[in-house]
Length: 474
Image 1 (cartoon, rainbow, N blue to C red):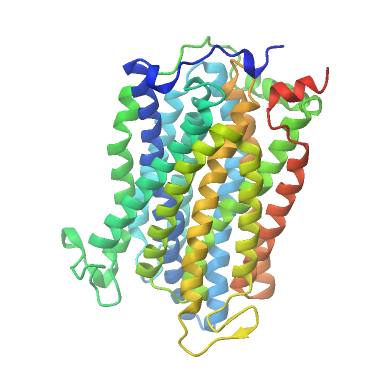
Image 2 (cartoon, rainbow, N blue to C red):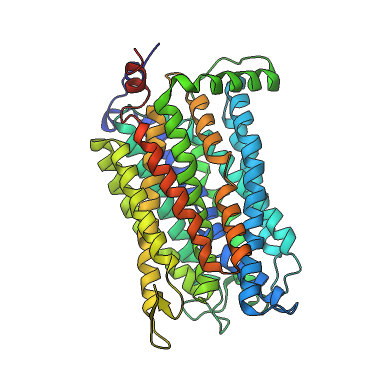
C-alpha cells in the first residue's frame, strides 16, 4: 500500500507556476468568504441578537429573568442540536457520493445556495420575536450550507502542497478566514449594528436608511453575510481547478457500500481511528464554545450586541495572528504537539469562565459595578479565538497526514463524519445542563469533559499519520 510519503512532491510555494499560486489564493478566498457566518452569525451578532429577542419574548410570557435567559439559551441550543443531527446523517453519504461522481465543484455550488438563502432569511427576525422558529430554521439552512461547502473545499487541500507545506497552507487559510471575519464584523459594528441610543459604534444612524427602532441595522447581518459570500467567492470560482478524477457509477447504493467498507477497515488503522474519535470530541466542544460564547456574554454578563461585537473583533484579530504563526510552527513541529497544547489551554479557559459571574469570580465577591468580569472575559475571548483557530488549522493538517494518496475526499468524508456524527453533542449537553439546573453559566461544564476525552484519545495518534500507523502494523 502506498504511504503518504509516496505522494508526488509538490514544489515550494515560491517555485509554483502562476496558476498554482492562484489556485492556493483562490482556495484561501473560500475561508475569507465563508467565515462571517461563524463570526457574525453564530457567535458575535446574530447569536446574541437571537438570545436577546428570545429572552425578551419569554419574559413577556411571565418568566423571571433567570428562567427566561435559560429558556432562550435552550432554544438556541436546540436549534443547533437539530441542525447537527441533520449534518451528521447527510455528511458522510454526500461525501462518499461526491467522491464517486468525480467532481466536488457542483456540490460546492449547490451548498453555497443553502448558505446564501439561509443567511438572507435572518433579516426577518424582528424584536417582537414573531419569527423565532423561522429564524432558527433559516440559520440551520445557512449553517448546513457553510458546513458542507467546507467539507468539499477541505478535500481539495491535499493537492495544494506536500506534507510539510500543508500545515502552512492550512494555517494561513484559517488566518485569512479570521481576517475576513473580523473585517466583516468591523464593518457591521461601524455602519449597521445599533447601540442603545439607536446609533452605530461611531455615532451614526445605521447605513442604507435602516430603521434602528425595529433593529434593522442588526438584522441586516443576514443579507450582509449573503452578499459578502457571493462577492468573495468569485476568486475561488475563477482560480480553483480540481484535478480530473474518474466517475464511479452506482449512485447512492455504491456510495453507501464504499462508506461501510471504509468504516469496517478502521480497526486496522489505530492512529486514524483514535484521531477521528479524538477530533470528534474536541471539535464538538470547540464548536459549542464558539456558538455560545456570544450568548453567554449577553445572558450572564448582560452585554449589549455592540459589546459582544467588540469582543468578537478582539478575538478574531488574535485568531488571525495566532493561526498565521501557528501555520509556521506546524510546518516545523507537525500538528500533534500543537493540538495537545491548544486543548489544554481551552480546558483552562473554560474552567475559569465556569466560575465567573457578574458579581464574583470563583466565589470571590466583587464590588458592585466592577468591570473585572468584562476585562477577564475579553482576555478569555482572545485566548479562545487564538487557541481555537490554531487547533482547527492543525487538525486539518493532521487529517491530511492520515489520508491515503488519491483518496482525499474519502479521508475528509471520514473527518466530516467524526465532526458531524455527534455535532449535536456539545449543544445538546449545554441544552440538557442549562435546562436541568436553570443556570446559563453551568452550560460550560460539559465542554470541559468533551475536551478532556479528546485529549485522552490523542495518546494513540501517531504524529506522522497514516505512514507511521501502517509501519507499526508491519
